[in-house]
Image (cartoon, rainbow over all chains, first blue to last red; front, side, top):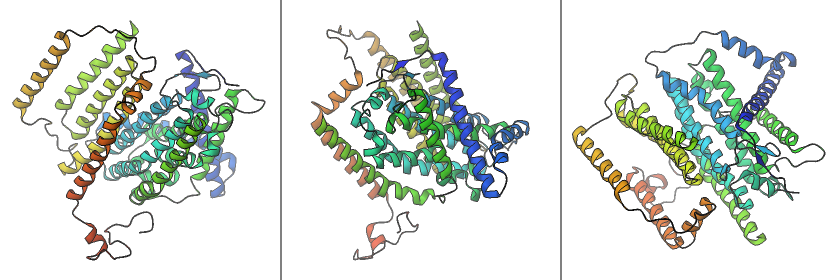
Length: 312
Length: 187
């Protein structure tokens, strides 16, 4: 049964933003719980971390640095959340989508490249050493994950013979792409972790450089960047649902509910990864990206292309 | 109506950001002003339903500018945020060349008697583009790609100070290459 995806009025973008924020808040809450468990504190206090942190940061005074490039700094810090929302715009929520682009996959790709610029700008802005080192680290890391990510996005598009997300979902009626494209899915998830400056791929904000791009951020600015990271994680997980996890397919519940459930589960998995894997140094990760991930995902695309040609 | 508003706003942003490249006094601002200009052009392409070309323009240009900012700042060897610097050189020549080429291209666009469209536009421009690139022009593409790849490899080889003899010894028989920095896959 192929579901028809309809484009809804732009006003629904508010609901999309609200849903994204809610899922991101859930992710932040889960991270708080996991941190509290490690620290031996009660889980309930941990779950409230995002709320208390928001309250604390909103009241904090903004730190200023000498000769800071304020416009670029603010753009970099504030842009992450915006990019995350633009990513979510093409994700179909069951039957509805905000933006039914014929090239939705490329749209997502263009948005994730925006993160290159934004994180570097956030690092550049304050005119401070550690912050700038963080910005450069992110670019080095981005050079390692971006090409594997592009080919990981290519695999479902080749199998569906379309760059439109509704078609990609429809092509998974029989079998979810995650089942027969596990390598592409794995690389995709790693890249989401990468562009969200998260967990093992967060040396751009590493403790060894005093927080890197976060080092000079305080108050609402810091809140925006931290929230932007969770929003990117959420957007990445939400986009994986139509690409690899069958979109709204699932028993009993309606499509939109399954999209939300799958997104939540993937966000939870990505959040849980944070404290379980060691940090990957960008200079070493570049070689892993080009010598291991890229050939692996190219092989995956080859297999998918052969299957698509034979099946078609 | 809406389309016209969007087109003119994007065009204004593209031109204004293009001018900003030469007006601002820092490398980072000049680079990202150029990126904004390209993004506006890419989005304007969406208006003529060249979705794929438009989005790829945005994608490539932002990526390019992010990398270019690194090189520009690396070669300047200083922090332009602390030391403002002019973004123009060869001022007069550049103005003459720029204005001259703009007038030439604009005059061409306005004065050439464009032919009337005889066929219907393709229903899906992305498919049409893919067909054009991969169909009749496939031979050209397949010739151009290896040439481009060879050029890149040759350029890197010529620019690189260390050769395989530095890495693997005079007889190329060293088991692990002697690199100043260790890589990520156990070397």
